[in-house]
Length: 352
Image (cartoon, rainbow, N blue to C red):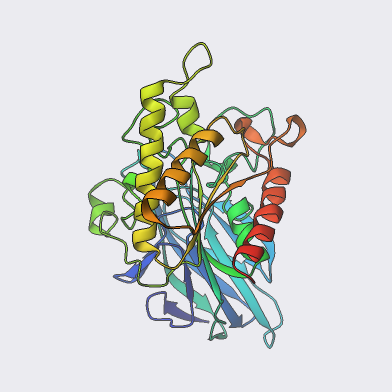
């Protein structure tokens, strides 16, 4: 068995807004991780984990099939990806951070440091398309695991590997990156906090990660959008805004709605600034469509003022009583349906 540092192995494909530095790859966001082609009979991955609140979970996929899903306890741990397999066959391995960034836990940390194996990593095949997903708890996969009756907020119920974003990217064989935070909106969070808006942190590596250690790891630095440009940016925001701006009589605060629409317009400008050649799709609807009209109005305003016609609104499948997952969030069947619908749309839009 040999040990290779993650920062020196050139054939490891890094997923999401992760940055290898100082002998470690920090996994900040949902679905950040690694994938690789390896010819070996055994592979272990060394993780470093820390937290005070939400414990980090990972998923391990082998040749496209989910074979493990587990919490990474505090400290340094070697976790087996596979063993006792044929040494001469090539395996495709993907390891993802299942859980979202923890903005209220300054101790939160998940890193990959070393790879322990008895074979060789092969050059990773290039994918033609790149997709970026921006969203809230739906895009972070909250509720995919756990019974419908569950109401506790625990990270075990979050899933990157089985959410609609990753399933969509897999369906079109595209690279993916996710920027998502549960409870946050385009303008306001579910509980009325205008500081908890995803556009405020979009331009940073992981502006949502707080604390001295995360700052030292570059979380607050501007993200380098030149690394690889997105072919499509898919935004799923508005669900929490609708809750945050709801009045007791079921209507919505007028001033807040106007600010929401302005936030959408401003965010589209930011998205276009950093994704000059991308198709932008505002995908919405898995937990109702109360703000669909406002989103359409904002997109129309942006298109008329900018002349940018490459912005679209797409309505995602609705969650029904029997397809809810845990915590009143979309379950796996809805995420699968959303991926089927969205991947079909992207194939048409990108002429795949």
